[in-house]
Amino acid sequence: MSDAVLDLPSAREEAWRWADLGGLAAAAALAPVAAPEAEFLDLLGAKLLFVDGVLDEARSDLHRVTVGALAADDHALGRRAAGTGWSLHLDAQAVTDPVQIVHVATGRQNHVPSEIVLAEDAAAEVVETFVGAGWQNRFTRTRLGKGARLMRSVRLLQPAGFVSLREAAEIGEAASLVAVFLGAGGQGSRIDAQLTMAGDGAFVEYGGTLLTSAEQRQECAVRVNHAKPNGASRQVWRAVAADRSQVSLAAAVEVARHAQKTDGEQSLRGLLLDRTATVNLKPELEIFADDVKCAHGATVGELDQRAMFYMQSRGIPRARAEAILTRAFVADALERIGDETVRAAFEADADAWLEAALD
Amino acid sequence: MLRIENLHAEIDGKPILKGLTLSVNAGEIHAIMGPNGAGKSTLGYVLGGRPGYEVTEGSITFDGQDLLELEPHERAAAGVFLGFQYPVEIPGVSNVQFLRESLNAQRAVRSEKPLSGGEFLKLAREEAKKLDMDAEMLKRPVNVGFSGGEKKRNEMVQMGIIDPKFAILDETDSGLDIDALRIVGDGINRIMRQPTKAVLLITHYQRLLDYVKPDFVHVLADGRITRSGGAELAHQLEREGYAEIAA
Image (tube, each protein chain N blue to C red):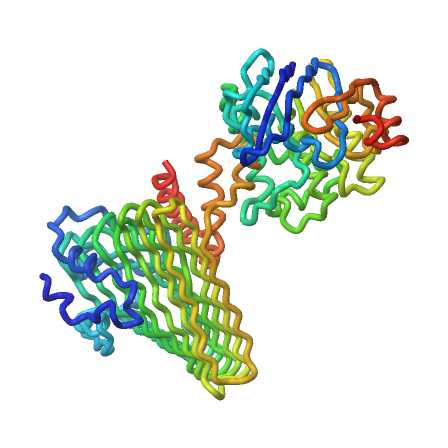
């Protein structure tokens, strides 16, 4: 299976400098494991179960989702995912119940494309969960028409292996994309996104929290391209790294010459639970317009020792105080999830990770 | 209740406390006064167990227990409350969560049943009301965006909820206007002026002592208690200054 990664770029390329290609190859070579239980959240709407990249029809309920052949883009990760995948197409003004997708892998590698196309003023919510082992690679193309709204929540909960997500999105006039990612498993990951603000007044919030321990490596590499005026983009990423693990956050904003009144914000923050852990942050701005507001913040630190002592002096044991402060640190990256059931599930996953890491 | 014997403590190898001896019995309020840099806050932090404050000599016993053997959270569960001169801001953690966690952690150590969310809220609202603090502030992140006076009042709300046996209050009067000073003073009297409890008031100025009458006043200078007396000593200090009295 090592040929799986031969045609991926090398770490000498800037956009891939922190990518854990070795971890990816190792994941694809992992011995198969038994398929874990697929657990859907208690929500109405479509439920899709993919096992090793193949739809398990008997245990799925497609509603408005269709399954068929899809093209991919020419990105190194994306192009591998051409083939059979799922699509959600909504007509103008259509609103659907949440779409849940659980990706189970028992080892090796699997690649699945998907497409979310929302026409004018349509609204959708998509929740994805990755469990199991091996290398799971996904390509998601998103197109939002005028005024369309999409809420995506993606959680990576594989105990081992690797998840790579290639995302390509076009956000139309006054359309809104909110995407929240949670990496709270033991797998390596790369979230590789190209977002284009293709209409006037487009809105994007794209972020999440990546939690790593042991030798784990997770990263995001997101580029937001403001091609039209009056757009607003927010990238809020939180990284927590323990042991000898590594999180890398690269978030770029490009503002085209005519994309005036763009409002871009990048907030990248890392928390080191151990001195041996690493958090790499790279906020990037390329601005060619002259009337824009772009704010960026990037900080890496440890837990506030004054707050730790304050909490302990009130009776809270040290480990619990660490958990509370760490939880507070990641909270603002998860609070954008609009659906209460989904948000509670993601918060519980983050809590479970923190409890294990701080034990 | 509290017995400090020949206490020596240092920060980063620099001696701050140099042989401090003090006994506090149940039912007593003691004021520690002294010039800046005398070691007043260090005494509070050493009693609370703050990391970085190293005791090099001497002993502290609390209710017969060796206080220095206990972790900070164990000291709290044993009944020690440290009111901070600069209460810490904790973004992302609400006052309610913080206090309920604190109280229930202490109750767990004492093998008491945890308070439910509803029980706790009722208690917290009552306490906030007694200290004239808007109950809405309980929902806000701990001390974030609070004025200096609000932070101090929040310390007193915490003390009321936790209901400790022994309170060390470090410059609790700083940042308070006259009205707030009275409210905080009344709070200290109401919560702590009891035969089974005791207070160590650390202060630079005498003004809080108009509201909370100390039974004993001690002058701390250069890491040692140089003089002790009754409430009248505080007035003398205010009149004549530390330079005269502390020497």
